[in-house]
Amino acid sequence: MTDLATGPTSDRADGAELLAIADRVVAQAKTGEQIEAFVSRGGDTEVRVYQGEVEHFVSAQAEGIGIRVIRDGRTGFAYAGTLQESAIAEVLAEARDNVEFGTADEWAGLAEPDGVAATDQTLWNDELADFPTDRKIELAMELERLSVAADSRLRIDEANYADAAGEAAVATTTGIRQWGRENGCYVSVSTLADDGDETQTGFGFSVGRTPEALDLARAAREGADRATRLLGATKPASQRTTVVLDPFVTAQFLSIIASTLNGEAVVKGRSLFKDRLGDEVAPSFVTLVDDPTNPLAYTATDVDGEGLAARRNPLIEGGVLRKFTHNSYSARRAGTVSTGNAVRGGFAGTPGVGALALSLVPGTRTQAELVADIDDGLLVQSVSGIHSGVNPISGDFSTGAAGLMIRNGAVAEPVREFTIASTLQRMLLDIAEVGGDIDWLPMRAAGVSLVVRDVTMSGS
Image 1 (cartoon, one colour):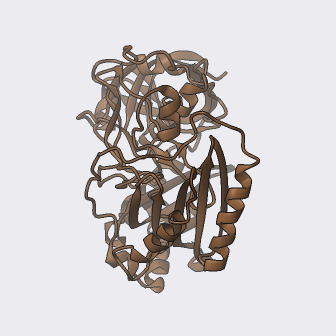
Image 2 (image 1 turned 135 degrees about the vertical axis):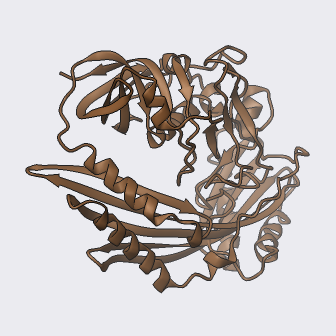
Image 3 (image 1 turned 180 degrees about the vertical axis):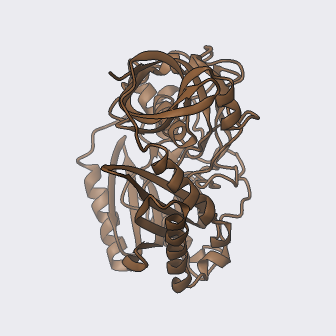
């Protein structure tokens, strides 16, 4: 969900109520103060079923306000999980008090309007907002039924339905005044496949702006395939090989790449790419974009966490490193401008920096067609410990994995209990092809099958 939409919407589609609250706070600024008020309210539903019964049901709502006060380079922040006027007055007073404890920072300051117009998007759907609870439960139960029927060796650990809806407003003394709302939903299933004494796990999911957009049959099929394909898996021999990353694995890989292209990490010297703008870092057919204006992205949004317009940012274009992601603070430190990439987890925190909706520009071929061109390789179906196994400064990459060997252009025996290793720099340069099977996931990065040469597989 968008950084400006973190809670359930009100009945007022123009956002006047939340904007009025933010405006009242900002209007109390004293001489020499910058003030930002971030106001949100939201709700979500989680349904988990097991063997035809509801095992877990939560429908939660939250609202609150976060206030930043900046004076003489010092920042104070405070928040409250209520929108009562008395509490808001206390939050403002506390934020002002906290300024005194802050450390002076020459780059401290709020975002300022930059003239970039927000892309008009339809991020709110009344069908989902009005969708009854009993139908949400039915979707989870139907997903479980479809998954059980997919394979006789399958057991269902859990089947889930989840949705979230929200609205938020932000106003500042620097002239920002924005409001947004959105909602979305997804289903997921966790599977267990048994064959004698062996059990393997799998998962499947589907995302959508509306319940009608959810593909339960696909989620069930993927959950079954991911678990059953690994039955009989053994530890492979160590070798250097070509790998095909499954879309879900690629999405996790792109999240790692995004952390190295994060402007905050760059200005702090914690990125392997900090001095490499303009360098060729991947083959010419590789273009990596952060595009929250793409309505297909689950995390699409019109504004970022500071109220600046979200925009399409090519980070790697034609294989050349073109841009880092920045919020207003990291941009000032880097001597550049914000890319509209401020992210915040809600009213209880201040903005950070991050990709909003990352994806590789897809190729044209399916995963099966990619595999057909490989004589000897590996289809990586899942990874474990990927974040702990990467050094964002050196680029060293190592993670546990499981998948299927590729023999003569077809998937072969399942393998597990091995690691794949390289460096992030080499993996980008060793990309051989980007698949056309882009998969929009309930995360900030989309998936696509990705062929990478010369990866070390360490097994037996």
